[in-house]
Length: 535
Image (cartoon, rainbow, N blue to C red; front, side, top):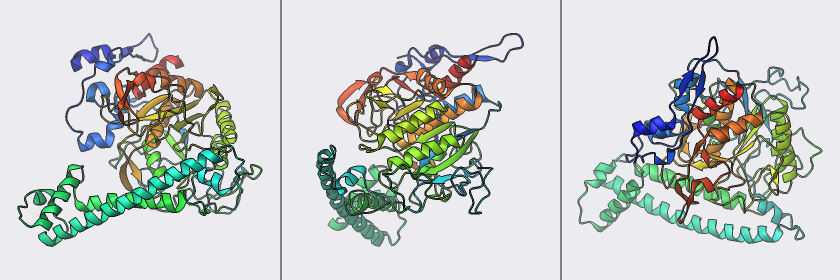
């Protein structure tokens, strides 16, 4: 195995070449031997956990995007152009301490006067638009198909079969987690009584010596929870409670054929009406944190002493609320994309997706519209551990692999440990339909009410790439959206290492088989390639 020093030599530490009176051009040698990178043996520190997506594989042996290296060695004190990035999601907490200074503001709209000052059809759209109105919970698309009762729908039979399997699965999970919760709560009650306090430590539990069977079982249960990375029984109860909330939402709303979630008064099957919803782009409740987390990954203020750093430093975030707690409607997504394009976004992030899409053509047309208007659309590949070349995941940019856009990028998720478990077990993949992979598991970012949390999903990988796209568009604004996509795909680190696919240890493949580029996104190399292309 090569040493770090020799790896750096072949990995292409940048060389600065400058001609007479010309701007220095950064050139990177292709990384020929990246698969020889040593594995990180030690556990990630808290600082590394909170920033791993920005670290460098060569320097840190962590498969990040070399964002910090890009700022230190390439961007430095350069001043880039401001780039509007639209986040089509569940809404953004626009009052968040790490986001409130990076918001897009529609200067042509007078706030809260009840008028459409800029005549774009949307009243008081100061920081974006909310197509959901006051809606939050929603059904899955397959449940809508069943609820329609249209047995002539060609997807009805498959939706019915999938529904029955899903309902039984989530019902079983509810039973399982209810039992776990009761056992953990009982353990906590016993230990609280034993110590005479609630805030006992795992070290105190480990020191217990007892012949009492009940207390002994409580110690055994607590030690098991601690061995799974939990620091306290309070954390364990919180985590299980959150899981139960998600399970109950799945059963009560997402899989409930009788539930009606649409409250904005609009018909989602009629594209003739377009101006519905309102200008309130905030989440309707604190737990609706997805959009705020995504926004922070893209553009949380850098180096301000607060919780997280975004990838891009010259971004104005446009919040478009179109993704509920359930499956989004095709109409909302199509109009959200068009709103973003028409109001100046140069990059759009879409961290959402579903397996059924009755009006997929509406969304595909909107993606083509974005491409025609020089806008990059970055989309999460999905979290079903499946091959999206075989099983559909919407929205997509192609019909039978014939693409309608040159600027649509679909992103799979990486985990923070380089090696066989590099690909997040939940991540979808596809040699034809996934373009690149980026950090997506265990990503630390902003959540509502000035808080921060770690979340995982391709939903986190997409905004990482959207951030890189924004960096390129900021510092090399003459490059087209199609060129930005090409740079991102061609400049990543090409890996051929064998990895576990879909979390199945019996499915081992070369990473190069999992996406079109065979690469993991690298901001440092992307800026170098962009500078060459811009010349």
